[in-house]
Image 1: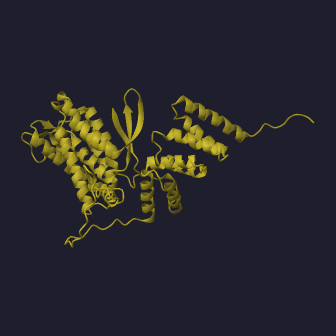
Image 2 (image 1 turned 90 degrees about the horizontal axis):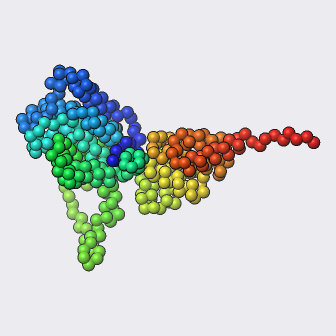
Length: 396
């Protein structure tokens, strides 16, 4: 089982709109399902797909069939919705969320005759909007199989292949019982389509401010690097067709205007993706001269820290690790990073007090016995360095 529990994104402001939606969904569930409040139940009816009313396309979004249904939806809304709300602004986000639910409900009613409840369609729209706005972000996944651990997966892979294709297309087609269940797969797919198309349109028509990390910017860079110019055929690479420039009535898209910090950040991520870590480190040092507290996405920040340590640039490595620990305190690999930071501080920077703090914190989260033993050994050595050699009490 793969369950998303977090992302690399640092929010600029509190996502109040998403908090309100989560709170309303929980409140309605408690009033209807736990306290059996008939007034709220009648005020927010399910969507009766055979004879739907306009109001039901809104009301059904706040009803849930059981605690598992509510908990799963709210987890996905929390993981993906906070970042989308931060990017859109609370009012626009809430309107987008409700519109996504309306469209998902309309698709469901067009293809089914059963009643429909739940925020899944709305959350599906939010999920693909997240994909459009943050395609390069990594998602922290709780892996629950024979063991329980966390892993990092790119958002494009997890959302497209796992959530959309596997959960809503492939797996249901393999399990006829799932297809005949009460899961509204068509509502999910309608929500995904709505979120993808509307988020792209908002970027294209400047309903949302563009940046260098959204899906359109990623596509633009891929084009510039010749991603679509070398068409392939059976005889080998086909030369790209010459481009004929014609005057068009429409105004061409303006290039993204990046600040020096944004440009350096983008260049660093490009160099990391190309495995040119030496150049990425050089650019990262320039970035810190402009913004000493700047932190890259989780995996990129950690990869740079590791490369700096391997290159024996120990002070810079510790600085990169410290930025990681401050920005991503709940990441699954925080404890090992604290261990490596403490080890570098003691062995190479000869700073036992600084090392001691990191090693003590690491021991609280380390689970592998080999890592715990290493942390305990390094902590004992650091404490011995702090106390200093025992005084010489022998006589003359």
